[in-house]
Every structure is written in C-alpha cells, then in structure tokens.
Amino acid sequence: MRSEQEAERAIELYADTVRRICTLHLKSYSDTEDIFQTVFLKYVLYSGAFESAEHEKAWMIRVTLNACKDYMKSFFRRHTVPLEEIQGLEAEIPEDHSDVLEAVLSLPVKYKTVVYLYFYEQYSAVEIGKLLGKNVNTVYTLLARAKAMLREQLGGDEFE
Image 1 (cartoon, helix red, strand yellow):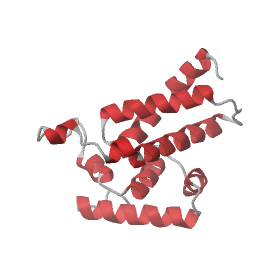
Image 2: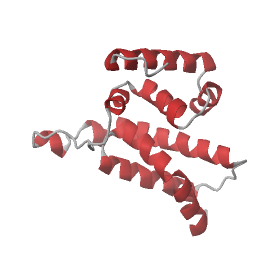
Image 3: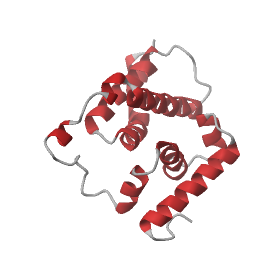
C-alpha cells in the first residue's frame, strides 16, 4: 500500500490525464468522478514498483481505460437511464468545447482512445501499441481511419 504523500503526488501528476480519458469514454461528470476515485484507489492499493515515471503513467492510463471499459459493460450502466434523458434534457457540454472535441467524442471507442493518446498525450504509435496490447500496424490503421472520419465530419484538413 502506498503512502498518502505518494497518492497526493500521483493525483497532482495524473489527475488531468485520468479525468480526460474518463470524460472521453463516459461523457458524464459524475461517472468520471467515480472512475477517477477508483483509479487512484487502485494506485494506492497497488504494491508493485514502477520502473520509471513513464511506466507509472502508462500504468495509470491502462488502469483508467480498463476501469472505463468495465464500467461501460457493468450491469448498472446497461440497466439505468441518465436523469438528463428522463427530464428530456441534453447532457451538459461546456461552452468552450469545440466542434473538434465533439467530433472526437462521437468516434467509436477504439478510435477515440488512439486519437487521444496520439494527439493529446503525444504517444507514438509504437508506445500506443504497447499500452493497448495492439500491433503497431493496427494502431496506424486506427489512426488513419479516425483521421478520415474526423475529416469527413469536420469537412477540413485539420488532421493531416
């Protein structure tokens, strides 16, 4: 089990990354906060050692992605309806989000994860392949398809 200082350091370093990945997948502030807590609880309880800061960051990303996937497959998630839908309201989207963000959020999960890791976290295709357990060529294919989908949705060349 990790100390309180280690947990605080990890939260300072990785909070934004974890929240962004959760928001990208879950599109809900409250679900994001739940997964955020789950990820850092797993970090505190994890007794293994990390080889480097990059290894620790990769571990955080992998645990976050897995927690999001598990939540999306959970019985609770599949058998509940968001309050916004019941009230006939759309989910709140902050005004400062651009068309690009909405286009990325509309991509299927396998594409938006790769797009996020490549463009925002600045991982190479080789690193993404290792993180996600996918072949490098598969990562390149997913990136190419995601760029084509975004280009089509946005009607531009922003993703060259």
